[in-house]
Length: 115
Image (cartoon, rainbow, N blue to C red):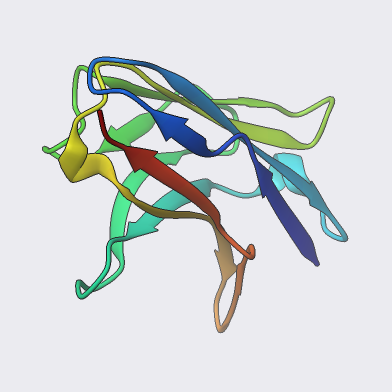
């Protein structure tokens, strides 16, 4: 199983970024996919989850209305569109998949929101 994130970077407050996670080594279309983030000195937290079909999504309260998770099962890729970014969104963002008892994480991509 391999999860490779991309798309992070430095952006000004109010700006946008789109993260991508390319997955391989498992039946991508069969599993829910999630994005997590971890800010310096804080615990890793869930940001968004999308079910296998893409018809159902969940978001952390802190990002509702600003972030959108989506997936392309033909490309084995999950995305996180982040709009109206705030300094508090600064973190390393991770792609995640699990099928009990196993779980897999990507290497993470840094998002920094600063003027």
